[in-house]
Image (tube, rainbow, N blue to C red; front, top):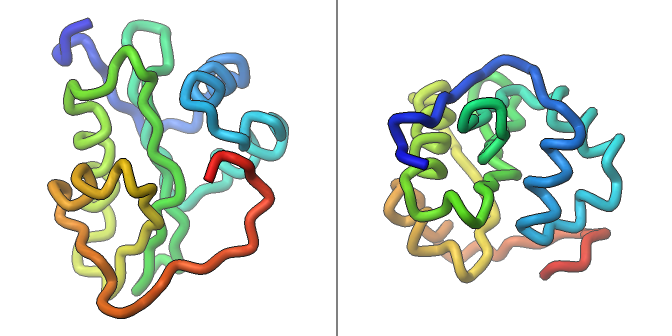
Amino acid sequence: MSNTSIRYSDKRVLPLDSLLELYQENAWSAADKPGLLHQALLASHSLITAWDGGRLVGLGNAISDGYLVVYYPHLLVLPAYQRRGIGTEIIAKLTARYQGFHQHMLVADVNSLDFYSKCGFEPAGQTQAMWIYAGKEH
């Protein structure tokens, strides 16, 4: 499981069984809606996947207007592969695509604040994230 064996791709090849394993291993409730999750990721403005051989070990996506604003809703790495730089590499590939955009946004779980800070993100001033959310893990 060395990082040198990890291959990154922006191709829209995303087997549903591999996708569900990734989301279930991370206890994300989006796995409860597999068809919608699959369609949503394939329809993302950008999608980066990480593979160890034929195994999906990570992914990140972006939703964007294509000019000024980009939002990064999902970044997941299989727990056994975490803390190996895979998430950092996925974020680097995504943010490079949107370099020069006016606003890069994400909602970070409190446990991932340090990670995103290391990737260059910072709290958004006096703003507060708000949502109508149908999930259950937060």
